[in-house]
Image: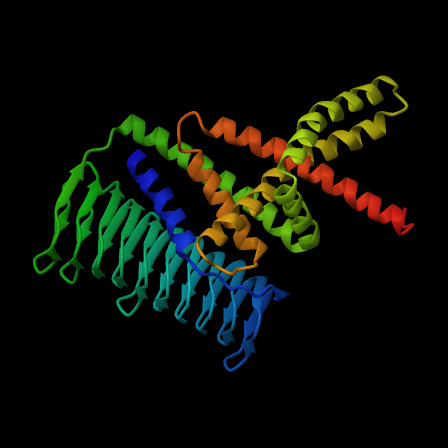
Length: 382
């Protein structure tokens, strides 16, 4: 499980880095118990939609971000797709990447770049395809479509009946099965207590390598993986709302990190010590107790969101390195958080990186607040 987790995170990061995301910052936001984008309708911006039931039959000329109960996407999307829901069904084509999280996921479409899915049950139809890598985590996983590069799967039950032009990595509780219609050009590396089942007619050009898992270590690694995944999704959700609600503030904080990194670090080191001392002083005075509570709340909030701003800053750097012209703060946040997750896999690095993120992020927020206050004073708003 440990090796699989490492491969999962590394390829997850690479898949994201190789993605080319929409550079449009315009966004169309919808929220309803039942949202329907009718066939023939076109959304010329990125679409963010939340609801109990979401049906996308029209065309989206941009990215699609959807959170809901039952989600069906039968229309085409020219950008990326990020969906979280109970039941997800995608039959429309996606030009770029698709990131899906839900209970039951079914795909019968063409994904232009990478596919990343975490769910209970996953089914990829025989008419579907993935232009690059596919990374799947689920209880019951069936892949009957085509994958142009590598396929990584973790699940209780894993069945492959499509073509894979690269390597296949499997981590399963039960014996993985390669069905008769499967064509695998690369190697098959699997971790399981049981031998893989290869049906007559299946084609594997490369080698088949087996690794027997250590039960105690596997359980420990699974718990750690779940904890890291939960932490990632939590900070991403908070950061998503933050960068959407305060885009100007987010860019100002990132600009301060870019032009005055040392200054941000100094402000952060001093602020992390001085602010709680001031709060304790207010508590002692008793009269200042309400102010102290507000100060401590703001202090803890700044500590938590400091990772969001630094992640956006790092994500922008990664996008620039890959040659992407994307100006989306959400994808900058996504890439930055992935980079920190990858760094956290290196022994002894996680704590040091977290400390740097805290100090520089906290300082950048303080410096930005100071500049905003000076501007408000100049305009006589305060």
